[in-house]
Length: 176
Image 1 (tube, rainbow, N blue to C red):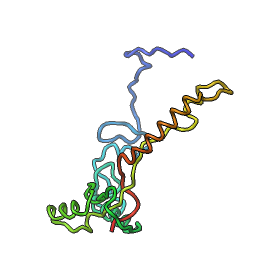
Image 2: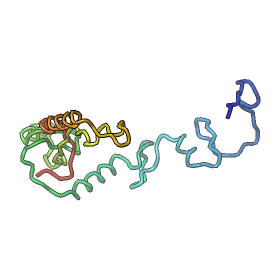
Image 3: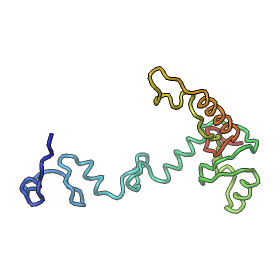
Image 4: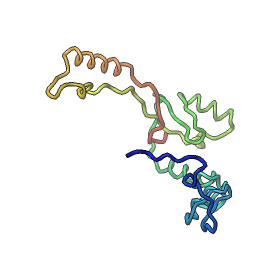
């Protein structure tokens, strides 16, 4: 199907219309019957879903209610003793710690209680391994990977396993 050419100053490119009805945002964008979209386009704040106070556009709940939700979510998690292996993450200040001494030092500097940090034990992140069928899509229908390729994949995967964790991310247990 051939694309139609529409010249900038032709009547097909745009037409002036009168007697339009519909919602227009404060930016002058026409939204037809979509009042919600027009209001959202023109607003800077919207009511918080929890308390009704104004919160910045793009957020469903205000800072105060987000903090309340975060605390409820944190309190619902199971507790686990952190033995200082790996890292812990503060959900409250969005900071990683590698030892209790580091946590205590931070709390002393910021003059806050350890409990206010909402600490989570981190899970380890590893590099991905190559799949056993790596490269099989490129083979002929009944083709098999050459032994040298299989051996190389096995060596690569063993080397990656030996690297260990390369990063950490907040886990699902509260640190005690």
